[in-house]
Length: 320
Image (cartoon, rainbow, N blue to C red; front, top):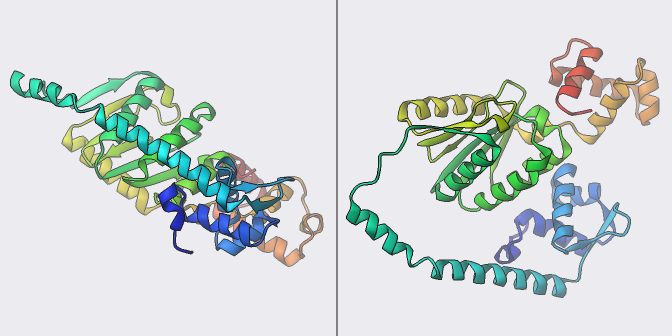
């Protein structure tokens, strides 16, 4: 991948590579762009969506893409970046009064002891706590997403995670059934592109976030984050949660190894509708040998003894 010369404007290396490809060869489709950039099709699609939001790529038919005028792109990104920096400078300048508050705490004596366990009620309180701990974290954040993502919260989760991935080491484990959702899969790919380490697992997964190895937030119900969570600062409990996370991490896989390819998705859809391999291969326009090879691979990956069970497992993972 080329040097990330547009990083100063807030553009990632992956975004820049795709943008340069659309400038050199306007009118390419998603698959051709993915090949040209050496990435998978899903990542290319996610990056193209991001570039369209930034006004860097245009499309007339949603199938082919061309790079927008470089002069206009740099001008627009520069204005946005400068505006953001000016806002940060104003915030920093207006925060000098905080020293008075800190000095009062120092004069008044030690603070109240930190509560080692605290219950968080409702989604809003959980989100606010995670956001605050992420803001004050200095080095690392470990996260598990057992899924499914709440559709109403996914955009907010994406915005916050992408904000913190710039300065924190982030390792994230996403359950396969959540990763199978197109929006969640694109989000995971974008996190990975921005520098986070993202893996997936099909095994049972808790919902938790661990900050700097000394504070954790654990959901009361991994299937329903709206039921609240527990804020944990007790060293022994946090140590056990770290051990659990590392165990889950060691048994998980890279997201590229977990998600089915476009061809595999098509085969899965056909498997769910037709019984005979010859009919399925003919529908997809592939050889019988290739079709059976995909079927065997999918059954092995899904751990299914037969095609019926494979279809059920694929639906559980949102592959269908």
